[in-house]
Image (cartoon, rainbow, N blue to C red):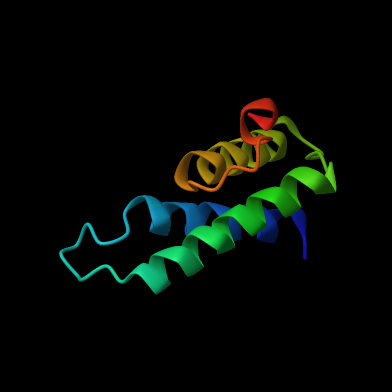
Length: 84
């Protein structure tokens, strides 16, 4: 998966998690848990890839995606603060 695709997927998933249920639809715990796990997985994968954008704009997109992912996900195995 390309860097652009990874950052876009993470940003979309994080946005969905941040606003999950805000449209008045019911929130089911299994859906919330699945989405939270997906955001955390995508965030961890992008962080661990150590890939940097080729331009300042690409690097900014990576940073934004990571911050959105860490902000939206409530999973923390003790590394979140250090990564942020």
